[in-house]
Image 1 (cartoon, rainbow, N blue to C red):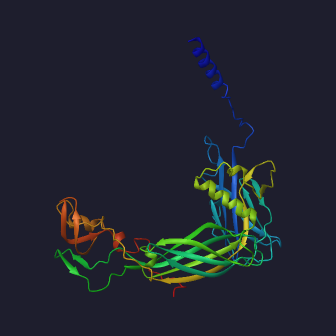
Image 2: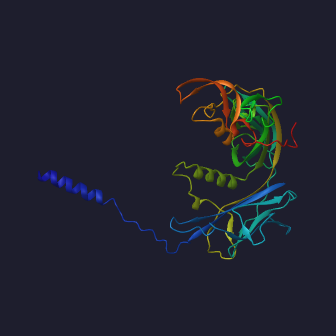
Image 3: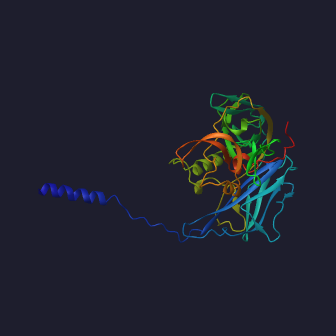
Length: 384
């Protein structure tokens, strides 16, 4: 028994000896750290994003308003200013700066004057873009995939960034074939096509997709599977267009963007730097002891637009869960007041009666009106 007690006592001592108190000294730390990220696009619209890193117990000083000025400069001394900024000097967290006419033979930097401090980025050189040789579509039984084929270009670094703009013509879930005459309380068959059945919509994919072709022999074409969507997707309803934008990245920019993506995704990796350890090319000019995070890059875009018809369209299951039939608890007056519209005579399982009911089905506005579903009737200027 004594041996057992001694063994247990020694085990407790060993266990407790592995625990050490650790007190974090934050007395000399900054209350907050400014984060400044710049994406300079020569021949396009550049963006500068502002944010802060603060303690869980401190208030973000930029939470309400940010006062200051942000601009882009080139080495010749020319400045590029934001447009439509308020006159009181307030800044948004994301600032757009037109740089359409910026020359390609200059280096650039971001200058930010925020809350009494001046921040400067290093001078960055926009590298010549890759050449987009083709944008192609391939489909299997379930999905359509967009492939981008690129040649690295004359100043190839082994790293490319992709963004894009998608535009397509789509139709609403249902086409109203009837109207309801309230004065006569009867359904009237439509003689004219419903005007808001077809619309255009778009999507801007501004998050940079990174392509690492550093292990591919120089001169070979890089083929990258970029975007995938289901064959039942509304992109296949009539016509779809994508404008691919490609840029060359230097290795430091690539690694910064890659690590930001890893940290933002929530994936845990012991060998990835945390945000505070990632490299930065920005400094506080007015107070060199102030820490600042973020990165500024510059690039020249290569673009290519292609179109896809509805060859890959696949019959899709229309969502009938929101369709309703008039019943004692669901009157026509109530349906009209909620924006419902008669669609067509059909069979639908009604949970109220626990049986299939045949009659006029009514649909909410987002299911029969493509504008309410996020579309527009304005045809894009570039549309074929």
